[in-house]
Image: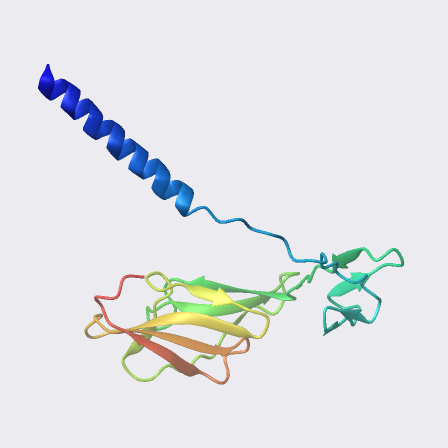
Length: 164
């Protein structure tokens, strides 16, 4: 019974020390005086940013809204799995089905387009695609070129242990 009573006093003392510690660490937070208010946006300035009306619009009441950017492509870039040499090729066709043409991408010797392991992406003016070494397959690359196949440039060399 003596041990139970003694352990109860020890636990009460420990709990009181935790409460005292918490109370001593308490801080009061006081808001900035006077309170800061954001100035009303005008049709020419918004927090130091010039409002040009192309991406941000401010109406007469000061309501700020953004203009969505819509990109419309006039053509589609797609992949043919087995082209002239048996390797994948990138092709382009207009949205109305006309002008179906192979993109003349001249990769260095021993490389082939590999859009399946690395993928390919179309931006407004560029195509980003993967390529692989036909002989070993261990070495993979990321290339970019214009939508018409010109200005081919190697962006990155990817080792086989790199997980995509």
